[in-house]
Image (cartoon, rainbow, N blue to C red; front, side, top):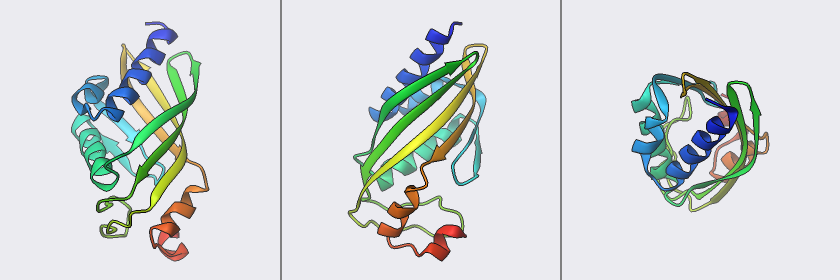
Length: 149
């Protein structure tokens, strides 16, 4: 596969996620896909990705990811993007905290992700957040102590 093919796969995966076509998203990743989230949590396997996307949709039903820029190097694609959504449902998955009740707060996060390929499938991903992301957590009612935990 060429780097052009990798870019096409990543763009399609993001488009599928924005369309809530999670079957198409997981079809692009290897069975043992591993992703390290910005909070350090590691998720493995297709079903964990599907659960993460469903949880995101529960918390932010209107969420979308906008690709700002793509970078390609050998077997990897890096994506600079913006996540936007309104916190309209319970938010789970923040270590040490129970679900955060809906606040109605609009969220805009600048993100960066690196996707690694092997044999035409995504095998590994790593996500990063702009440090300004902590401001949105405070807007959801979390204290700096809770965020740092």
